[in-house]
Amino acid sequence: MKNNTIFTELENDIHTATLDEITKNKLFANILNLKKQKVNLMITGATGCGKSSTINAMFDVEVAKVGMGVDPETMDIEKYELGNLVLWDSPGLGDGKEKDIKHSKDIVEKLNELDKEGNPLIDLVLVILDGGSRDLGTSYELINNVIIPNLGENAKDRILVAINQADVAMKGRHWDFEKNKPEATLVEFLNAKVASVEKRVKEATGVVIEPIYYSAGFKEEDEKQLPYNLSKLLYFIIKHTPDQKRLTFVDTTSKEKEVWSDNDEIEDYNLEIKKTFMKTITEYATKGADIGGDIGAIFGNTGRRIGSAIGGVVGAIGGGIKSLFGF
Image 1 (cartoon, one colour):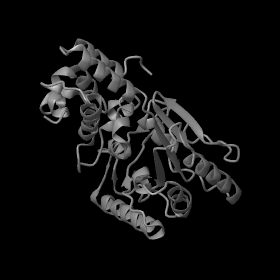
Image 2 (cartoon, rainbow, N blue to C red):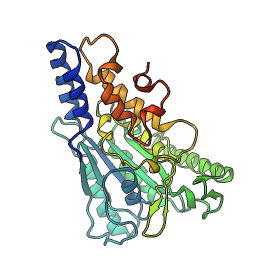
Image 3 (tube, helix red, strand yellow):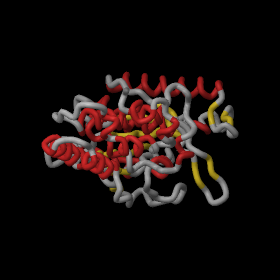
């Protein structure tokens, strides 16, 4: 992790701002509180759903090599710390009844673990489904009987279901490999799958979820396929993350621009992600401080850093820094 983080940038901007010392001290106190915020994200799913591929593509960390087998019987929940982002990678389910019982028990224990303040340790659970599989029974068992019953009353805010491997959802048919996107027939199929998952979960648990589909892509020695809708997946993760914790993702996501480039055109997810970061700064970094004037001028370097994150540069955004702050 680089020493020059988003929090370093914020502090530098405050140091150089033409503000009185009382106001600066208030801003520094707010930044200190933001620096203490940790995001605990659990990633789980059935065996072969592509958890490792997703983690490797999205974050600045490399977990077990994709396709390299590890004995599921000896696997435990793996912990990866990326600054203030803590990833909990749980073993895949579907390798036998006894192993599934053990892994499910481990997941339940982690979901019921509390932090020092007595709040649930896990902020959000990302459940990954295999878009190329017709049999999602193990996944529904995991969602309906293991995860949702252990998320409390606000379960809908702490679970995100994402269908991976969208490119092979119809056995590779109707995927435009040149443009790295689904053709209309496949889009219709994937939307139907999303609706089916949402309906099945609601019928079983009463909880309304909002599934999305994506492809984590892959890298091999002589071949690679870029992700699709990875920005959309990150946007949905950040939307489910408490506002004051969202800056955690600025420094922990992949710096490879190309992995964020291919998405559907429903929204500009990269821009929306940056706006959520700026919203946190506007609401939490300046809380209780009368800074007056133009917040975009005070946090100019911070804005540029955020503008260059997640597959783009601030110069490509209409209105520049100010637009990120909502001006």
